[in-house]
Image (cartoon, rainbow over all chains, first blue to last red; front, side):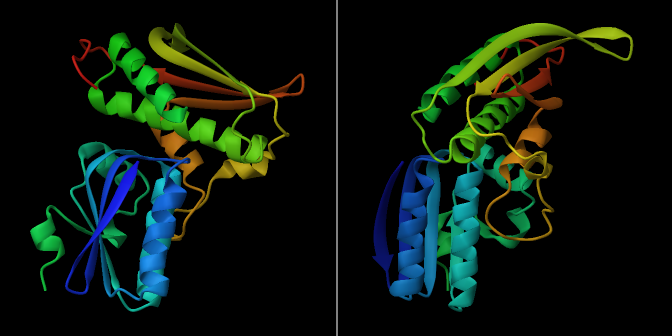
Length: 110
Length: 136
């Protein structure tokens, strides 16, 4: 997995690629939680367009990020989920709790 | 190494004739099972041995035989408390505890045994009548 961040006004966008699994999810979790808890960024967006696979540890990191954003009064948004990633989220029954968009334009819209 | 296993298993499932969505399910189930072994049986030590075997079998169901993929995973880790294999309610939105749910949702049969000091997990997925897919 690779992760890079960029900034757009008060929005931080993480471009994630590769597989999010037991080995890589701690890095994603650390990056997103730092943005939410320490830097107090009001909107954190995950670009998952290039993510091929996610497992339960990755889903757990997403849930923890969502909770952190709610605690901080911010927003945690994802976009660009492929079929495999969407299937895993549907299997977890968590699709409905996340803010998910098809593309970046929608994710960063006011 | 999990990504290597996922790649190989995806190819195997495709070769056996699983449809694309079923290929993803098999890969997810085995990945989650291996993750659980590393996390719980081996307490996070990812260099410990895990034996895995995969074979096409015939399974009796309702008086008829069905083709299936059987996956056996065996580890030498600590005994897993059966209570830990119960999963959890998905109504509670919190991290953790999803792996077993993913395994059960993805496979047709899930059986756990403790034998000769080893944990044995048997996963079975029926092979539907379909033509092999060209990509998974």
